[in-house]
Length: 493
Image (cartoon, rainbow, N blue to C red; front, side, top):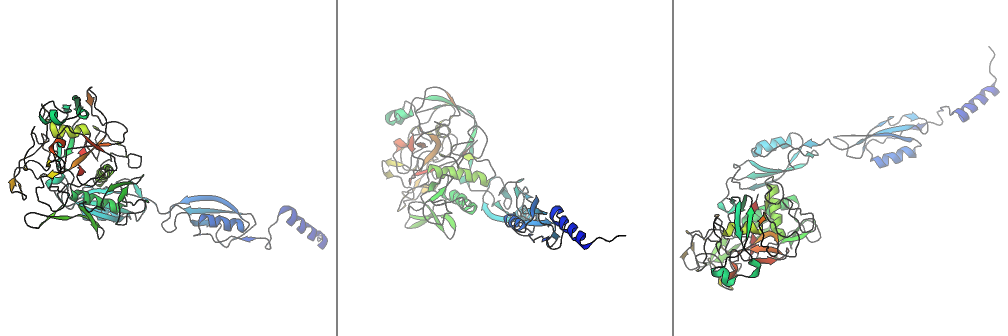
């Protein structure tokens, strides 16, 4: 065979390298090690080495953080031609876990169910429940069925057993009643055009608080909300324990805890009720069962939503939208909300056939043993002889059994037609409605004007005279107002 000349051989080699790109050990590229790098850094490393980014696949990984490279092809250190393709698998983080159903389980069983799939036990809050046995889960966050990353905390609310009576709700049957002041007695003498005309209102069945919300109950919900990170300062940062408390997407002030008249205090990371001094002598009284006050309309609404969340119920207000509108209106079933003005008056005044002037199933209000009101303007009954305001009394104090320390008088059983207490005096109570004048036509489940500058509150207070404690009397305030004689009670469809 005839051998190829050196000249021809070298010529062919040069032609191969220039024209065909033949592989050569002197022009190969080593694939860089990009496993564990963030995707952006890995792409820079690939192109910087003269290589080409290939297919990028995403996959779950329990060991590589989300957004970083899990594996590569070819492997690191492999010699390849310039511009060769390098493909990546990028981590999506750990595979989400389905949150288990925990409500109704004992705490120990719930804990095991949380830890088993790789979740963690979050904040554990205790509260009384008239429906759930002691030691059993009342509600959970996140809700069952939601997807969560491993290690996510699942918050639990655990029942401590039955509540005292102060959290009770009363059932009010569906029906039609006459709303607006009567034309007799104190209504005729002291009423005004805002209470006219009388008109027929039909309501679906609903429940209403037997009593106004207490300081104890408000503290329980505040402590839960604090653990959730819901309490903010004026800048939107987490509330640090001082100053006004804000909440919601538009940061509304909910409670004037800075005021010494507020019966709620914060110490060592916990909200609790204050004590105040009264009769006999210098007796110290817990404010646990006294109605919460110095709470804005927003503060009442926030409580409703948060209590609903605690109990696993749908929330009724959109706290992310301006004015926090009602989104689950009666008679649609939902969580807790403020009573509408019509619901409040129905519970305070209507016995099925007639409209009582006062929310104690009476057309007359007199004496210091019937309700906690001002016998005349700014002349409070003050049944406990408290040495400083607010001069509230425990909810339901006027029950026909209790004896007021200030004067030693046996109280009357001052209950409304549906069985509610304190719908006449003690504290004013926020309603859900914006203020507006009545019409004469019939209405069904009214919720008031869609917009407005003021919200309604009802029922009179310890500070004001009986003329304001009439069941038809309407007062109003800005959503941001808070006073030492203004609180609220709950409703629920």
